[in-house]
Image (tube, rainbow, N blue to C red; front, side, top):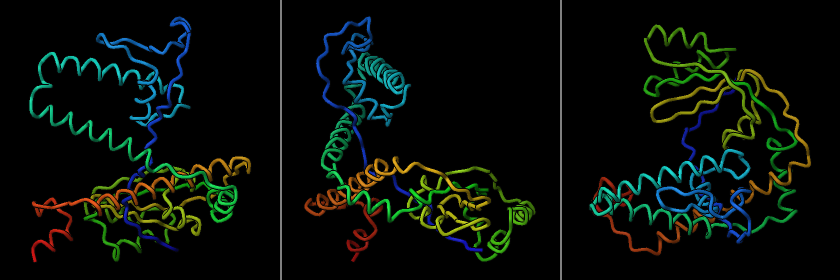
Length: 288
């Protein structure tokens, strides 16, 4: 049986959709629920634009029927808590002021990065090529049934434990050994589309079948994902171009964001004065 080892660190993308399109003035009544003022809290009017910005800030999709309610609840809570904090003069305290400045900078940085990393629209040829080059996402998409054993990484010894699960149909042999050793672990069952995994795992899964394993080695925990069933996941070809377009744009936005940050860091005069906080390379050079 095949077994793949991957470091279980998959950083979240830079794609940040602020979801705040310019709101057009509407001459509609509050009774119809279409007014620009969607609520009032603590003497503050909350507008539709505020609502949309909040949805983007907390990562809610406009397609989610509960997104507006969740965003409004978040806005009301923040508005009331902020008013109470100002009433207690917390906004004048040095720590609070530092937090507010940091939050303001973070919001501005996120907005700038979202605007600066917007990719160009992929051509139809690029979309078609992406679909053809990635059959696990489209024509050959599959759903995988997994048995997942999670244990502390300090207890995972590749050489001694791999023979206990590599060719097995389940984790019985491995769990027996872990039980005798008194090691903490858990086993869960689940199914997932191969298209939902990050590219490194997705690429391995496309080559794997039942009883094959993927090991995700993290700092604290290690997960052993054993494939127990593979079945075809039918999709409509009409769904492929929009999905391919979105994936191409997400990848391009992430690349543009990464390149932008690399350029800004290169052009900036960055000095490190605390070795424990500095990048290891910079700390090593400083020590010479």
